Image (tube, rainbow, N blue to C red; front, side, top):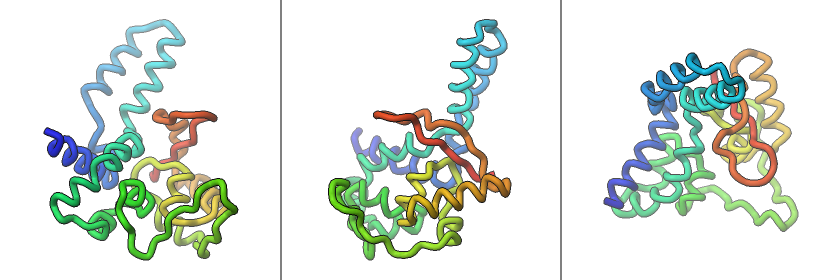
Length: 186
C-alpha cells in the first residue's frame, strides 16, 4: 500500500507541475458554488469564496510535500534518477529537499551563516523559469538561484505586462508570518 501511496504522490506532483488545473475537483467546485448561492451570511460567503478559489486553482505546494516525502524511496526502488525528474520539470531545490543529489547544484548554506554568493542569474533566466501553475516568489528564487530582488522585479514586470496574475495568499501556508502571495501565468 505504501508503494501505491508513493507512486500516487509522485504522479500527482508531476501532473501538478504540468497542469495544476487537471487536479481540479469539479464536483467540489460545483458544491461550493451552490453553497455560496444559498447563504446570506457575509462571513460564511467569504469563507466559501476562499475555499472556491483554492478548489479552482490547486496550489502546487500542496502536492510538493507528498513528492518530497515519497519520491526518493520510490525512485530508488525503480532506478529513476534525479536527472529524469529534472527533465520532467521538477526544480532542483525540490529534488534536493526530497533527498536527491543534484548534479552541478549546490546545497543551500544554513541560514545562520553569512549569505552565500550566488551565481549571476539574469532576468531572462528567471522569466523563462516561471512555472505553468501557481508559484510564490520564494519558490521561483529557489528554483532559479536568482536573488530576491531580481525575482521580485521580474514578477512585478510580468504582472504589469499582464502575463501573470496575482492569485492571492497561499492557502497552504503554515508557520509564522503572513502567507506568501501566489502568482499564476495567464
